Length: 209
Image (tube, rainbow, N blue to C red; front, side, top):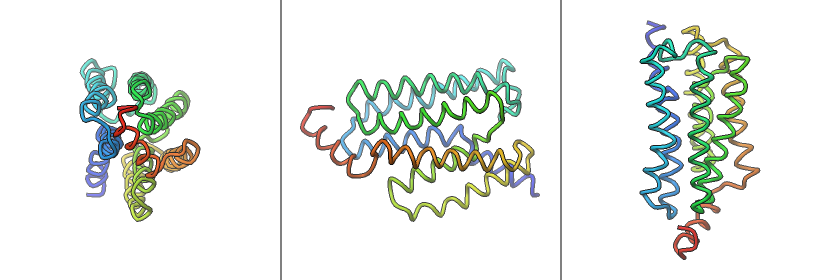
């Protein structure tokens, strides 16, 4: 029963769904503040759908042995491809003048790069990392009342340890590092609701959009 519940939690809060979800949230937030929907579709294709299809390809060719990519060495190729896709999305947003969204995507890119580098030597938990990043992201954009969702991060960490996909420290450090990078990035890059409003004014004036 305990293992079955852990499997459900792992699938429900899988990075395969959460990463595109975070991108969709960032793009949707930008849409409210003046971003055109066609660009959002392009972004979700580049940053969400294409990496997922590549993951499915790796599964079909047995380059990845299972859905969880249990073997650390098999994660490197997937993470590298995803990193390249995120880079294209961030550069495209910058070139088209979507400044606030470009900052957010650049921050996601930094997070992906850090986890990819760590994975070269150590199997840090991407499940807890993405879950924690998503909660901090929600809290910084929409208010601290979203931070209660850290309870879900704790449950995800428990599930990954119970399933023996990660050690306790791989799960905890994944969550702490990802949340810290997002929080620090928002502060350093000056990402906040006010900057989004200012960005939408620029879009309305036709200078960037």
